[in-house]
Length: 420
Image (cartoon, rainbow, N blue to C red; front, side, top):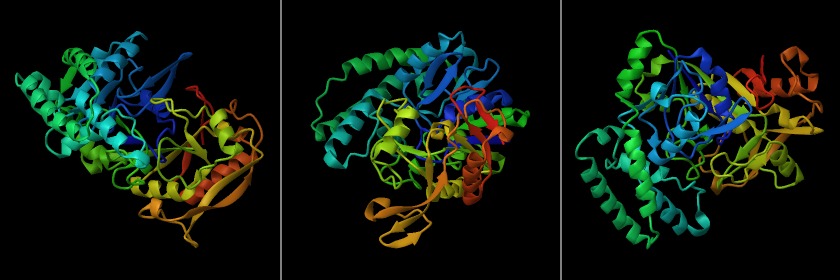
């Protein structure tokens, strides 16, 4: 069987730490979608490390890590990441594997991303400009170059053909930036990528499962950024929900067992797009400051607000969440009063469903207030030590979303997780 860990909000829920926490219980950790726009922050000893494409199980010596076919891979970012991981004494060539069906991000994909976003003016969607969208467009347009193509003598011809196609598109955008440095780095990284373990991903993972190996699928971004079910068009370019595991790794639906959904105790979002519970006041600034809410990949300040239970119940539903992990509960330690959004007032009508197009309606969140626990939760080791107010807050969310909160993270350290 295969278990899944994924985000239930707009990403940045702290999935990296959670995957790292559970990794020792699994033989294989696999990424099934997304690209280098995802930043999973881990703490190895007292050192902070941000992984963008390598699965978060890489620091466990006996764990196999697979980059699946649903990922779009930037060879330059991967090479830098491997060098960082190697500085911790980890041999990436021993336990990192890449599916040959994984699509590559080319320098011209990054250029197209930048040109497209610049052309939108005030309608920018908040792209990280990593080339993710254009790479997925080439995938669905049947033009992509895949990792397995690196091993074929026609690779250079394929690259030149696709580059010329991209150049015509860039000419339409009147994009004139010199990308020669990007290309130089790209081909250096391609040579490095050829030295890694390139495998037939779907056979690789299914054979391991048939032999009794336990697999954990690691999601990137969050469910509200799903290309189909997120806040379109302010979404990512892949299926971030549990269904994406099947086509992102090549496993059958009945193989999925546990779906662990990760949510913060409050809510954040990076980039543009609707965010009903966003706070533009001192409280929002306080959440940002205490929670160090700045993008792991971009460094951009995250928008902050109270937890949105309408959206959370929605993402629990579409993912089939069996267990919820709540992170950053300690960020709320000093707040006198807390709020949770229980419904939306949509154009004057109260609703408890996520609208089809959130940007076309006026949404006012309807809140339920809670008394804050006003105490240091970072030292708590078990549920018995939690205050009554903290338990009350968590229990209400638990009952509302219809999926049990099994774990509460109360600090950045690996050991700072309360098992309920």
